[in-house]
Length: 124
Length: 152
Image 1 (cartoon, rainbow over the protein chains, first blue to last red):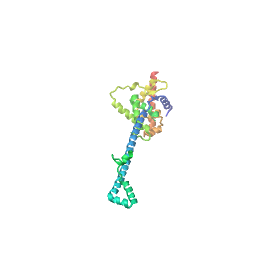
Image 2 (cartoon, chains in turn red, orange):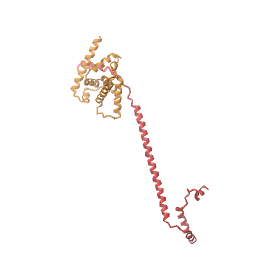
Image 3 (cartoon, helix red, strand yellow):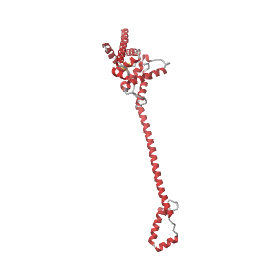
Image 4 (tube, one colour):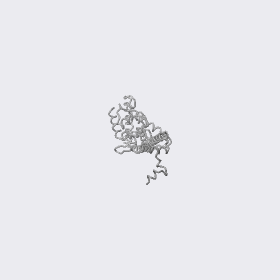
């Protein structure tokens, strides 16, 4: 480049392009951030709800299964007649007590029922 | 990058025939796309930005063919002396340059790139870039000197 070119270049450099307004990215970034946060919160709620529901269902099914198994055990036992129980009570008091205790574990009346004895006792 | 080159890009668009407000809009949109990664940008984005802004301004101008052209009285440069006339004459001289020369002048003078960098980003041989720049400076000098002579 000759001296004239350099001179012209310096002359051009004196001019500055008009300033441009600031890049309006802050507002947009903010909006997208809120959108992202809302989406993340929605996902967390959905996943949390699904987990809670599945665990709840699992517990319920376990309780149901236990109860069913207990009922089957109870069903498998032979029902004893009042006469046989009276005879047993007279002959062997200890055995009778043990039998009553075992029976009470599986065949107590449901205290949730409206007029059940246990419910009335519990109120008292 | 926007702060460093935004103004020069907007001025370059004005030299392609856009008014300054539209040029600013185009530059903003381009940078927002760039930041949102909505467009693929090569490793050296400056030359790409010049090309993209030029294309955008051409599209915009094509769409606005029937609108009145107000750019002739609009100044897209600022001179430290505040001489608006000088700015307008420089603008006119720049607009008369061929596209490839004008691009090199903007990249060199207002985006601060070296001729070697320009040659790399525009994928043009260095000698071609240098001669285009020299031609451009010569034409600008000629135009500006003749203007000053007329002004006395």
